[in-house]
Image (cartoon, rainbow, N blue to C red; front, side, top):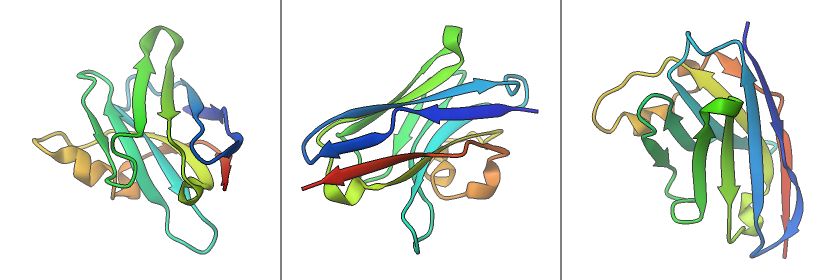
Length: 131
C-alpha cells in the first residue's frame, strides 16, 4: 500500500514562491507517474503538473506553465512542485497523486485530466495566496 505525504503549503503574498514536497513510499513498482492536482471548495479538482518517473517527461496546465516546475528526487522518493510568481487564483488545496499512467506522445494532457488514472492520493496541503 502506497503512502503519499504532502508538505510545504502555507500563506504567501502574490508574486511570491513556495515549494511543495510529496514524500512517497510503497508504490515504486506499481506506478510510473506522479502529479499534482489542486482543488478549490465548490470546484472540480484540476490537474496542475505531471512527471513520468522513468523518463522525467513533464506536462503542465496552461494556467501554471512557465511559473510552476515539477521535479523528482529518486534517492529521496520525493516529488516537488516549485511554484513561482504565485497569483491569488493559485489558492487551493494541493494534492499529490501517483498512478500507472498511459504513455504515448502527448499523454501528459490526459494525465492532467483523468483523476481515475491515479491509484494513490495524499491528503493535501493548503496554499493561500493573498493580494
